[in-house]
Structures are given as C-alpha cells and as structure tokens.
Amino acid sequence: MRKALFPGSFDPVTKGHENVVIRATSMFDEVVIAVGRHREKKGLFSVEERLAMLEATFASHPSVQVLAYEGLTASFCQSVGAGFQLRGVRNPEDLRYEQTLAHMTRAMHPNLDTVVLLTDPEFASIHSTVVRDVLSHGGDVSPFVPEAILPWLTSKG
Image 1 (spheres, rainbow, N blue to C red):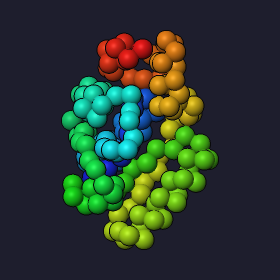
Image 2 (cartoon, one colour):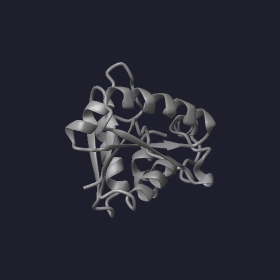
Image 3 (tube, rainbow, N blue to C red):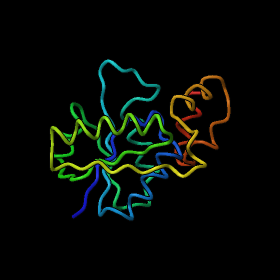
Image 4 (cartoon, helix red, strand yellow):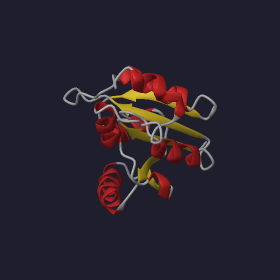
C-alpha cells in the first residue's frame, strides 16, 4: 500500500492544500493529512477546528484520513506507516525550504521519501497567512478556501 503523509498547520485549509491532496489521491492508496500541534504557536483556529474543516473538505474522498500529531513529522510518518511525505509548493521560495527539509528527512530516515507537488498556477498565490489577514479585516476569503469550511470562517471574521 502506498501511503503518503501531508503535514501542515492548515490554519485554515486553502484551495491550494485541497488541490495538492486531491491530486495526490490518484498517486497514493491513502493520504494522511497531519495537523501539527505546536504548543508555542497559537493559531486562529484550534487544532480540533482545523481537523473538522479538513474532514469536511475531504468528506467525499475515502482515501483521505485526517489526524493531529506532535513531534517530528518523519517520526509520525513512520508511526502511521507512511512511506512518503507529501509537500505542496507554490513558488521557488517554498521549493528551497522543502528541499532543505527533504534532505534532512532523508538523512535521518533513509526509507522515507519526500514527494513535492506544485500547486496548480491558479492557487500559487494563496497562503493561509494571507487568508487569515483578509479574514481579520472583514474581507471575503471564499475564493481562496474550500466551500466546506465557510461556516467556520464566519465565526472568525
């Protein structure tokens, strides 16, 4: 079974995240979306809210599982039996960062491969930080996020 783990904060999930996951479902038997718990990082949405948003977004994709985790991503990959770490890239800066992480991961876990998917061009400018900023100023974020999560956003705007 080919299983990939797609880690991130997903605060909130964007159409770019959705694009990467849906495309990955054709490449892997199972895609685990892993929401990182960071004690020092305070998000706009709780981890539980992010899990619920992701579950709503991918409800029609039975090969997608949503979990939360703490600690090293590579260790979590091993604990869930994922042989691949999936990363989404929007631009050259993302690629450089992901390349560094992939090399470090490979050095520590030689059997764990990193698969990088470029987001489709129409999603390349979408970033959770920008979505949060637009939301905090009362702007319309509906063009940038999956429709399934809009009910969560109205309570934060």
